[in-house]
Amino acid sequence: MKQLLQQIINGISLGSIYALIALGYTMVYGIIKLINFAHGDVYMIGAYVGYFCMTKLKLGFLPSLFVAMIICTVLGVAIEKIAYKPLRNTTRIAALITAIGVSLLLEYGTMFFVTANVRTYPPMTGILTRTFQIGDVIISMQQILILIITVILMILLQFIVKKTKIGKAMRAVSLDRDAAELMGINVDTTISFTFAIGSALAGAAGILVGMYYNSINPLMGILPGLKAFVAAVLGGIGIIPGAMIGGYLIGIIEVFVSGYGYSLYRDAVVFAILILILIIKPAGLLGRNTGEKV
Image (cartoon, rainbow, N blue to C red; front, side):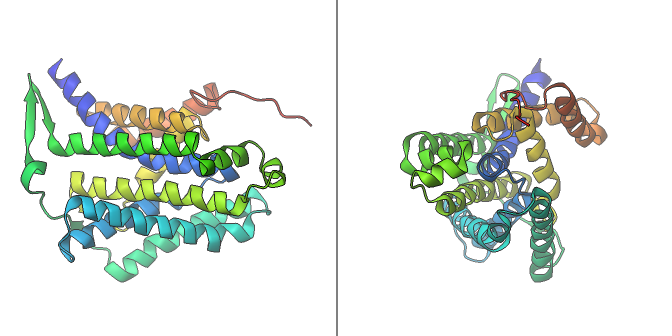
């Protein structure tokens, strides 16, 4: 029972990070039906920005988090304007290939400027080093912080989507882009805002990973990005609560597989889940199958 509870705690921490990345995937797909494979590399950039803020500028964790989110927001909007906007009316395969190209550009561009060496985050100090023991279960302050930041960002995202004017515009564009444009909604601005929010969340996930696992490298976004995509598909891609649920499920499953002695198979299990969900319920846990007129 002790090990079970401990693995659930660890899985929630990892799942929080996957959920933040998956939200970016699902928001962009919900708006323009694009799987933005460069999203995992925006998360990597966020980790590096946080690293340089904490080591070179000597900023604290929270200021570094805000800087990482702001820079990733600008990067996400720039990627949309430069790489995706000119291809908006082309085939999906063209946009998908471009997304893969942008991903490789970010990875190897970062490698060119900062080298391929693994960087180590500075050790946490003060309250961030504390641990709490509840019975036989140990919870670190870092795990608590990851969960708190994730919950705050998710609540803020839900507020923006459900209660603000731009959120209503996002929902309208997601349902019917042409009708939204006829109703006076600026589709370009709405799409850019969607990329901005998704990239900010990815940037936050990057610095949280750096704090939690301590090491970062230019290729660190590939596997978590793919797993976050699996989480988005599992929950129902294009559905924001589905991305959250999928992220936590994938995180908990991965930690359980590793914790019970099968760490070599943890990645295989995640992608096996993707295959199963596509076979059994392609629309995801919260998605609904819809008919298509021909």
